[in-house]
Length: 272
Image 1 (tube, rainbow, N blue to C red):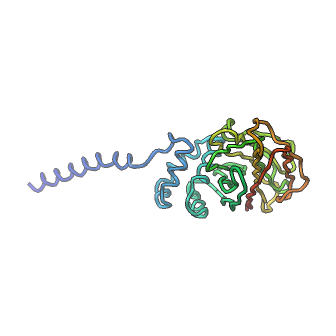
Image 2: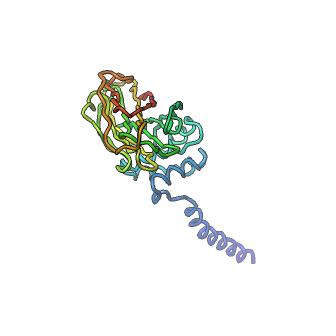
Image 3: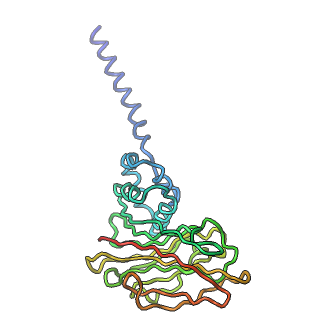
């Protein structure tokens, strides 16, 4: 009788382990099918403890993103983050992402005001990559009703410390590369098509390390608006400056007679 009871218990344990094992495996989430925006929102919604528990799945999903998708992932993380920047940085470390970012201080004149523009420049790197990404992100709270020429945004860095590698933009409906002729002098310029509704997007420059010094980098966003009437969607005039805040080149807007403008600047330092 005792022998039969022992056999029954053993069988019950084995059957239980068979049914429980697949359930335990199924509890692990699969994030590989998410878009870059959905993946960013998922990471933001998880606590640091939950991110660590899903480390392998999240790291795998991030590794599968293309360069453009990963840039979009960082852009969406930064723009949607309502918490502390350092907490976000610490949350990303276990899943193979280095991030440095901070939101700009808000200022504001007329038309769409600078305070209506969420703007930030970030540096990011994925595990296994040889280059860093400098990403300028912007997201307007309202739409511009008096657009003039395209807005201009630069990504600037110290060319003595960082070597230009490549560049990228978000949706080409909202952003296009304007001028990369000074990329060896530490600046790349992009158009922002602010006459379109919801023109929030990003621009990215990839750099590789030339020296072990700290890389100073930043981004200037110059917004133009018309003081007379709604004008067309054409490129703004600008002139190059030989020396900018990061130690490389920069630019200045040359507005038309009826145009006014304001600008915001954000910067950071990359310890690599």
